[in-house]
Image 1: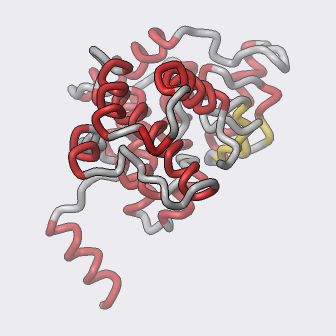
Image 2: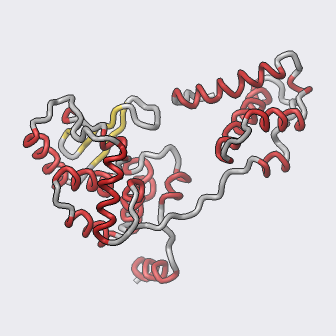
Image 3: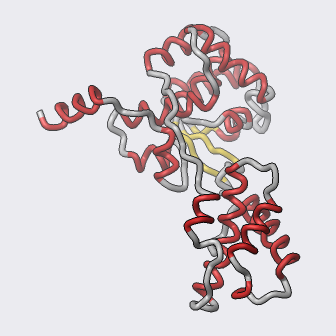
Length: 264
């Protein structure tokens, strides 16, 4: 099993410890589908479908690991149509994407320097709100920003922002006299959400922090940036399927316009 981030390891440990407590004295091939179902139902009572699916994935992966590495004849009790249906992954819906002209207007009409930078870093750099709030002057290297302790579990990641934003960010740090290892935006998540909400209010839409990150991905995609770059550089996702959830729908008119542009 590849090395996973700490939260994932803790989640697996929690599920498998409880499984061991219930079935530790039984042979692996004695655990039936009904046993696995009963265990998962008890473990994930009153939990959201996503949590139930995660616990199911932990248990199924455990049995697959035993089967692939210890006993190839072992039957995985989670590998049945009924179990897969009960714990199937939630179908993701595409989000409404805020178009570039509207994002431009929000940023242009946001006059407070702090608030504008917060919005630009999310909309132009694809940054998560937590990443913006944890940014320090020591993390700024021109247009390259270092993200410490990212969500991926890596030691750090890198974000690239437009030159003009990098210059405004550096100027803001200098004007505010922010220390090298001090947070540039020492505000709470709630304050950041309020900044974003007020930005949406300027143009009469409901706006959330992640809407700006999705905009960054979709605008890049529609501008011809390869999805591999969007996934690995802008959004920093582990796989392309996660990136595709972020991208807006393409209607027939837009699809035909792209085909005409490509071949004419």
